[in-house]
Length: 243
Ligand code: BTN
Image (cartoon, rainbow, N blue to C red; front, side, top):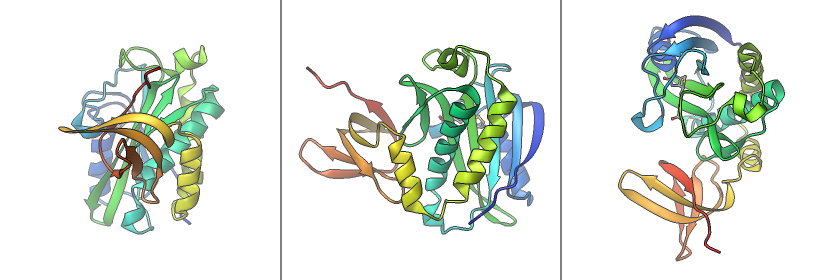
């Protein structure tokens, strides 16, 4: 069991909290270092996408982890982060969320938070940077939602951050217990089972019904011919069944 002790550094503006924390990690920074920025000028999302990060519209931060569990369990770190975001938004903002595989946090079927976990080499061994961007107010992404829209009130950024860091410490301490993490994640994701989805990964597209999550975090998809495909990368889109 790993006990996470967050130490928070704050910045007005950074290109990307993930990039800055990776730089500090590569020089030997300790597990638990957290970097928060009021704005990011080159925020990054999954699959090399940009993450729009204007001042006042979001909570943008990254946490340095040096996991002691075997590397094959590291994919569950994004599950741990997603569970922590769900706890924090419920506790500190009264917002109920859903999780779309692998780690988009939704409210009312629209994205409210994204998570970017990156493994890197450092002078103290391999580490993981977990970057979290929560849309607090409308403005960053037209198609997304925000805590203001979901809760109907002004969010307390500091309260959400504090709740999130303590939830992250709780879930991270369970990282070695795959079944618990996967079961908790699945119970909070309407995408885990019985959802008709399309999965796009580059030029590849699959359609099928989700049927659970593997112990390593891969999504199980049953295609029309009954084959089970294990999805380890890509974007998942909900497909409305024809009446
Ligand atoms: C995604 O859904 O594509 C992941 C978005 C992750 C955005 C956060 S904001 C804080 C941290 N710094 C970054 O550059 N990206 C992550």
